[in-house]
Length: 225
Length: 203
Image (cartoon, rainbow over all chains, first blue to last red; front, side, top):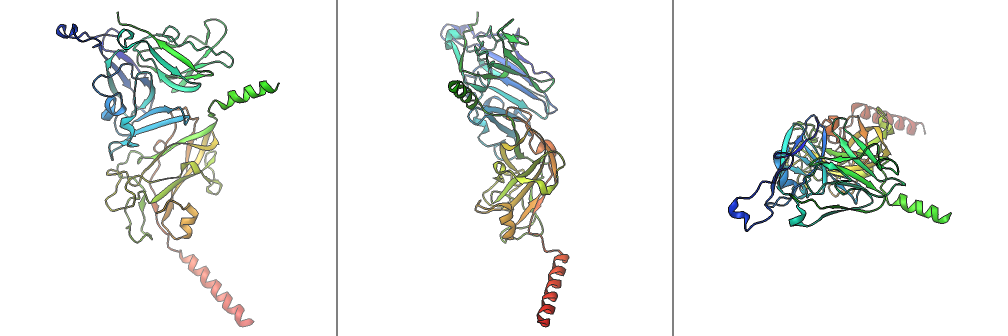
């Protein structure tokens, strides 16, 4: 089961505000991004590509009890160099550890989800439109970072502004292949397209690892037309 | 030359290593809502009763060795996995896997220090009210203790989301208690006493 991240309609749909509000309120580009999370213990690597303007972008608010008992959300702990694993349980506040609901799922942060049964999870919020929210930057550190695009975009990652510069040893992007349940690696190279084996692409709601040999600032300046 | 070596050293130091095998040392009952580690009939903690699910006054630790199907005698304690059971600070009659997680534990991802690949794992638990005892010390004090059967588990690199927990290997519950000495133990002690008496008479 391949993870699909779809915006509500036509890939990316900015739902306009009612006319009465349009004159006084800007940035009401509400978008629903649906992530299908497969069953059978398979993992998907996703991100929340919109920012929720009603509640904080946290695990408790954006996924919560939609994930069945036994399901897991894994966030990369950069300092400890391992995953923080949040498991849905029947006791306590429904999560182990109990701090799980407060874990952030901000745009730009990637995370893995595993569910004992197939579910869909809809992320609702504003597009981080550069016109209203400013140019979006994601400061990627050396080593492994689990990230996602801060904007709900489908394109090659270089076209989205992610083109790290270290060739020897090469910077790498690791995209999780849901079908094979392994990483597909995309390595910076000095020949051809600059990537081997191919240029990595991004779909709306994808998460992926970067493995960099020098810090890199990923700049995204998409504006809704 | 020195500069080159230094540069390589700095580069290597700035990256985490992933060669060592990791597990998610957590168990949530393997899908069974009533599965948990409980006190057995040989209970030796006066304030507790057989059948209760153990809580925060019990420690739990993995004993492991690289390779599948290894003998129990080859397993060594994995210090990074030592933790306490979920639930209240002390074991009570009301604690259960469904109510507060008693009988279960969740240490999260742990670097075992073993190589990536298949390993043998056994889980041991013991009464540890002050969290300062190891398994052998608890046995010596005649506190409740117990251990699981042996399982195989796959150790993975730290950035592999398919890191295995004990639920992944269908781990099953076990009990903690102070086993009563077996008849053979009494028989051996009796033989020893008789031998000593005979020896003293001859003197």
